Image 1 (cartoon, helix red, strand yellow):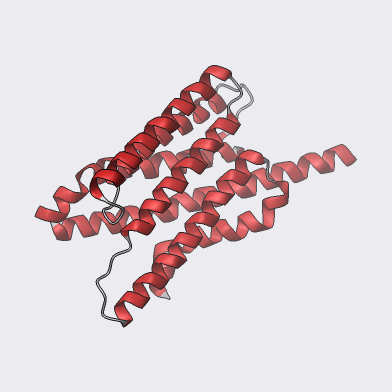
Image 2: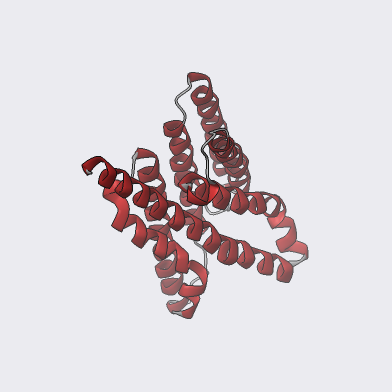
Length: 224
């Protein structure tokens, strides 16, 4: 139980707040929430698979599940970017990025197999998402009345940018690090998945709550 709390406490918090605020969320944030739901489902599935393999003396291997996770996460977060932007040129650029990610993902799966972690696909995903959510952040700062403290998009974007910004350099060296520096590799892996992962979903939780509160306040003003 302590391990679950350490690894994913804020993931489950984001899920709970997302459920509570879901009806008030717009389409952009509903897609973000679906990504949180998918992350919870993958985490629980991974925990169950690992537990089963250990009890039956099988080799621990759930890399295929995390390949599925990378695939679905990238699609959902890229689609959220498509929903956010209305300009045709920006949407076209995002679609090109989506196609590039799919090409990298399927190339690595076809050449290395589904049981080999698709780290190149995750790198492609990370670079693409950093660009998209930095563009969203830039758009938010371009609004004269923008207040970062009260902006749901600010907290969401910062969480994703920091997480993937640290993830991309590590994932580009993960196999080399695992071969030559396994202890350091394990330490960095847990830092990114546990510490930065929790930070990411803590910021997602804040963004859900801020959007919900702003929507509720607008409704109250309209009634008055």
